[in-house]
Amino acid sequence: MFFGIDIGSRSIELVGLGEDGEIRLKRILPTTFDPLQQVKCIIEDIPSKGPIVSTGYGRTLFLDYVHWEGLKSSVTEIQACARGALVLCPGVRTVLDIGGQDTKAIALDERGRIIRFEMNDRCAAGTGKFLEFMATILQVPLEGFGDFALKATKRLKVTSMCAVFAETEATSLMARGERAEDIAMALHEAIVSRTLAMLRRVGFRYPVFFAGGVAKNRCVRFLIEEVIGSEVIVPEYPEIVGALGAAMIAMEKFSPALACG
Image (tube, rainbow, N blue to C red; front, side, top):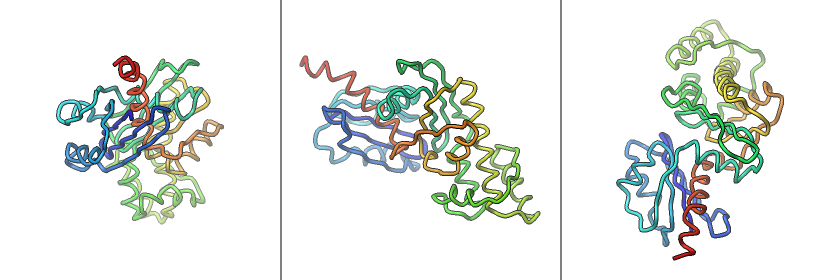
């Protein structure tokens, strides 16, 4: 098999592809405060360790500190995410990836080559971490936060994307007697506003592919589609797109070498 591992700030994904390019293995673990140990856990019990490509913020961690019998290499998150999106949606022109602590907007040409990208990885604003923090403030389970926000009956405004200031605004709205569902919708709109600004800067075109854990949030998807006037494509497992792309790159990079050997 050919493997891809995406070591992110919130979770680690491992994907294994067969010779036919089909997914044969899929594993996900939280990163926790000991990512190296989690990486060792996610790769244990793999009987045949074929070529692997690592990506994510911990990609060099894998290269430098993890024993792996097969060939290994690494690529950036942008490369892996774009390649994974193309596997799942040939012809995609724009890739949006909102993860735990970063957001990526990638523009592709008609041949699938990256022509522009933008990445927010220095601030949790507009990411899954922001949603997690705000769900806690409103005492709503994160898994149902998007559905909760879709119950809003009016549109309020939260202007700050700083978690601390946004919490203050949310608290003020609650003190005014505003419904929690309406506040949740305002927080989702704040995230989408920031996301759409990134998409516009890279010059997005259709179709738009939505990856990352936040793609599971129905309210975020609804608000993006409401503004762009088109459906966004969300795969069944949006959180593994980077790992899938890395695995595909491993197959493309190392398969000829294996055939020659």
